[in-house]
Each structure stands twice: as structure tokens, then as C-alpha cells.
Image (cartoon, rainbow, N blue to C red; front, side, top):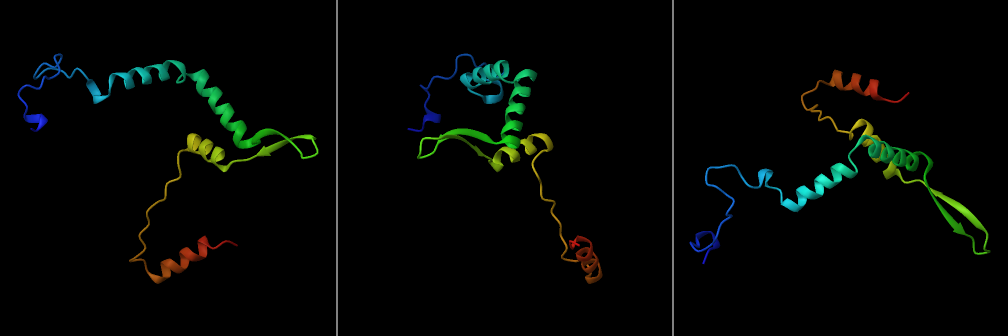
Length: 121
């Protein structure tokens, strides 16, 4: 039997027909609680500033790892990940968007001028 057609199926007792939804926004209660916790713990100016400082340091100075050579001599290995720089730029300037350009009905003169201007010197 289709669950939607079952007359014995109990509905939400808090739901009043025609009234406001007991679950506004359609988000599960636990998800709302988790988002509230994230807002309180991490989404304030001090935490955001700290996160940007860590991201900037990783992007500009790299991630440093203490290593040991086969001879037993310690050294520091610095690894730069382009993803850190990309994320920093995306946060600061927004992601790069490609502008759709349609040159199908452009004249040959216009295309020649465009090529001359875009051509690196």
C-alpha cells in the first residue's frame, strides 16, 4: 500500500492545517542546532580574522614539516599548495568567472583589431 494513501498513518501532531510550519525552512532540527553552534563558535569577527591569518600564512609562507634525513639530521621541509592561494583569493576577491563572449557575427576587421590588442608584445 502506498504510504501517502494510508489513512492510519499519523501525521505531525504539531502541524496545524493552514497554520505555520513547525519546521520553517525545511531544515532538520539537529541541523539548525549545528548551524547555531557554528555561528556561536566560529562565525564571529575574531575567529574569522584568525582563520584568514592562518590561510594567508599557509598561502604565502607554505606549510612547514619537520623531517629527518636518512643520516638522522633534522631539517624543515616547506610545501606550497596552490589550493591555499586559490582559496585566499576566492575569499578576498570572489571566484574568477568567465565572461561569455559570442563573436560569431563579428566582422573580420573587428577580429583583426581584437587580436592585435590581445597579442602579447
